Image 1 (cartoon, rainbow, N blue to C red):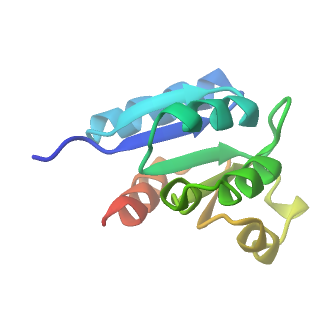
Image 2: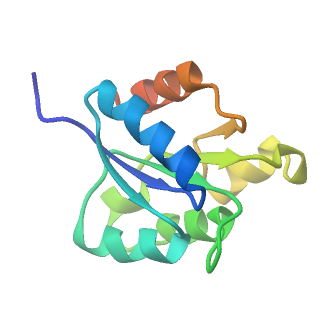
Length: 126
């Protein structure tokens, strides 16, 4: 089997972060987890990931601002990484707003972990 794919989870809820980590590690993904969008941008300067999972409501920098900044990165490969929104307030934004911001997909809390695995598998199959 090839090297495991790298997932960056940005989620300020340690419960959701830990559950997503365990489920994706069980699927042989290599997980890095942070608590906010600023940490996402800092770690992306040094490391590459196959997919980002961003909570929408986070301290310091929310998921909407973070996805816009990632999409604006000068390195094409990093700027085009698949990004999935994780939100408990899907009604605050339309599907169109998520797409316009630069998200590839949206997962609504409470997380359906089968759907999480399905979306991550689909977006990392390249």
